[in-house]
Image (cartoon, rainbow, N blue to C red; front, side):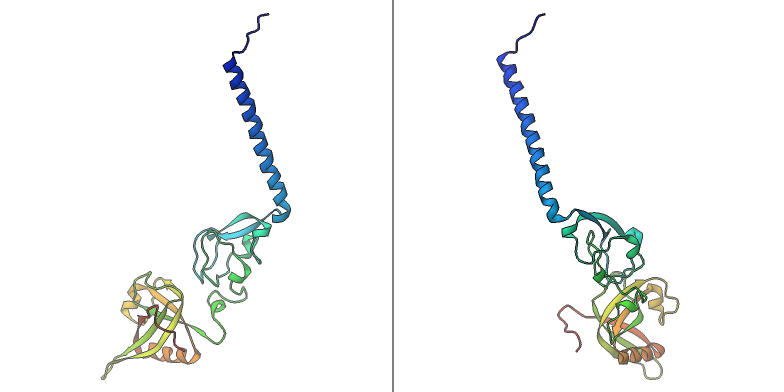
Length: 222
């Protein structure tokens, strides 16, 4: 049998191929060893419910706005929700960024409705229909509410100042108190005191309501 001898160049390439294979094997083994060493520290993985998109305070969670991802146990935040059914239908008590874990502290009280669960103790949620373009306000902004009374002596007066916007809702508000508000279909839910709620209710019964949006440097009423 005729055996072909390898040329010096072939031997060099063969040696390089073997050396490369051994180096790749060593790298993979080293990476696997590092993972094994870290596994006791991270404690393996566990399912965590995260936001599938950016969500605002007051949003009611649905299956389409959530997803489940595997996360190292050591890195999962305390109180992380691990199953979708424990979050769906609950309202958020704060803004959540896309991909951020949903925790128990970010969920409003499940025993109350999505609006009532967001109202701090001592305050009330008061809805006001206003004629503003969608997207002009977001939760956390502050507004003043003014009333324009008709009759023989028409006049306008400020009913309440520096009220925090709890929710912004859009839709057909057929029962709104002015044609402008009815056309825009924008409704604000404001955080007010019991006295402010009474004054706003009186003004809404006898006047057209409008708002003025406070700027960022305007101090909250205290």
